[in-house]
Picture: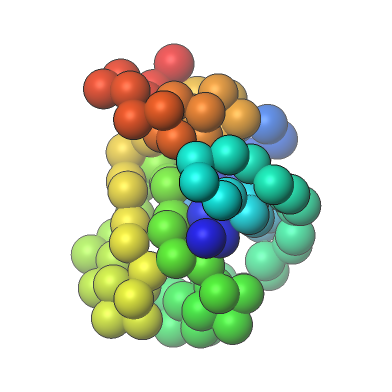
Length: 104
């Protein structure tokens, strides 16, 4: 499964639509197999959604996200988990461990 996290530095980006980088994480059986950071300069929500779909993202962990983007992503089969904050790696670990508190 591919999990995407829009990032700003090492933090979860406060806004999905403003992030210029995305952390892509390959997860198998709850374990991180591989990860890479990629640029995403496209600001159009339709294009952003299509790009994530092309990258085969299945889940998106993000900060704030507008309703239109969320509907587009859901329509492409991407589960969206909004309102996360904190250091992206720690948020991802807590998410994968299904901890109740995801924010730092």
